[in-house]
Image (cartoon, rainbow, N blue to C red):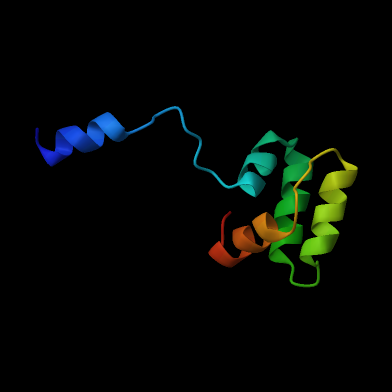
Length: 76
């Protein structure tokens, strides 16, 4: 079997590889998604503040790491 065949057999097309913050943004109404994107881009918003706001709206993250990683990697 060729490497291409082996890799094709290993691919899981149903897996959602977006980060958890990107998934939340995608679920939000447009106005809320824009507000979250702006907060993520604004260095005056702490990771904790964003996490508290998300939690208040029913979006639970176990800690600040997903927000930190999302910002560090520059996800849109």
